[in-house]
Length: 302
Image 1 (cartoon, one colour):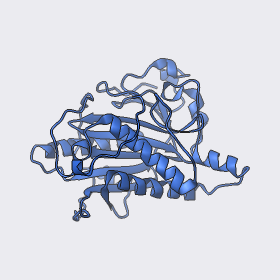
Image 2 (spheres, one colour; image 1 turned 90 degrees about the vertical axis):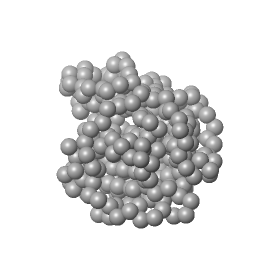
Image 3 (cartoon, helix red, strand yellow; image 1 turned 45 degrees about the vertical axis):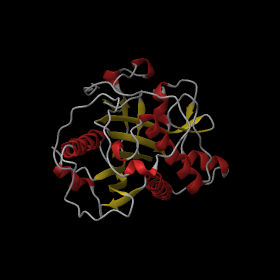
């Protein structure tokens, strides 16, 4: 299966550093700065049906939230959706009208994605005869797998209103996951020195990858909730050969000696915990689009 074209290079793995919350004053007003990530081209138009804009809570920046966490959204269309939002947001920068961040939560059908500079040695199949769709995209990092049962969250943030530090942003996303797993499932997760992502023991339960342009970052994180882990055996996830991949369901079943789980409930719990921790850590006022449906959103994408 042919790869989709990659626009340009981007960030890859970063050595993990201690997580330090951004200073509250960083959110007060935008600051000038350059994000050291290659820019990507974008095309498309408005992101979705017009939403009613309500004032953000005192001291918090507004964030429009598209809750599709129980819906399966084709990867290529979600990618185009992100880029259309980024294009719109960049258009608002010069006029000082970029007043709102964005968060998209969804699932994907089975798909492999490769970062802009991914190494083909991490694939255990021929690109021309791949078991699932393969997309080469503009995020950093190596190959990973997305599929049903995996909670994918795409924050599209203007770091000028948070902290103009990409490594801080990576550590912040990891912190959201670590806190959510602890509060919702009593799972003790952690970082691994020198690697990006979140781990339980030697198993990676969440992967991260981003790209940015003019301090607006997109792509995001993928948390294995009830994911079928078999497709990961066809790759070296994130280019790591000596560690495994795990899921929330797998961990909970091991701790309960095989007790069955309600997959839909697990996904709901994971989503609500992740969103809560995300809003708190980034000090955002989430404005969730009611009755969000990708079939409607699709109409506004080119």
